[in-house]
Length: 207
Image 1 (cartoon, rainbow, N blue to C red):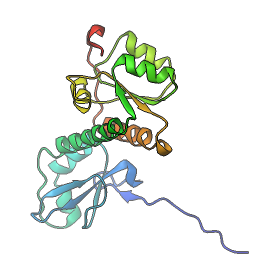
Image 2: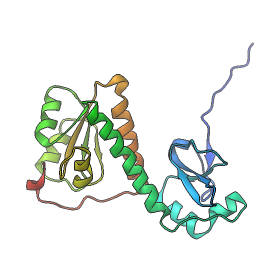
Image 3: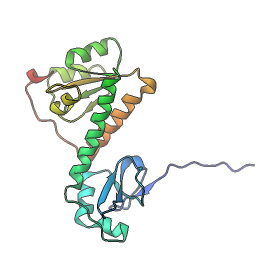
Image 4: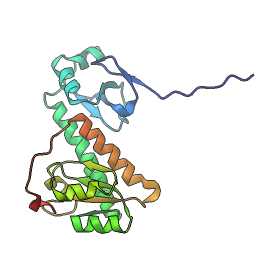
């Protein structure tokens, strides 16, 4: 009988914990031309990759304990603000995807427009600013649609050319649901890297 080929997902080893995980749960780093450690979130940069589980505390640990130099077997530079840079890059990536969805006519902001998208059964994903609370959040949770908490109202608003946006709806009828999937995955990756609480705000600020 022919031998069945078993396909396995690629795995990488975390230089901080020794865990073996799929690349999607990790962050790849390479050494730049100047010897500086560069985060390679897209996993496309040339050079030998060094991998860390996608958690802020592990990045900070790797910098403090000089784990990148140990992994590279050479003296390399890892800036003290590396974790901050990664967090910003992860957030910027999701906001960029929301911006692409908006330009494609697949994203709207503002509670009324979000409600309209839900009513027309167009919404596939709801994005809510981290600080949002009150009846608006409860109403959207009651729809049963997937919800991602992401950034603050000012950051979300910048995508739509306004001062703030607390509620955003991503259309589910784009080609293959690509926007919904990319934004949900990116938001989860950012949140898992740096979990944030949602401070209390007056519900009257919801927009």
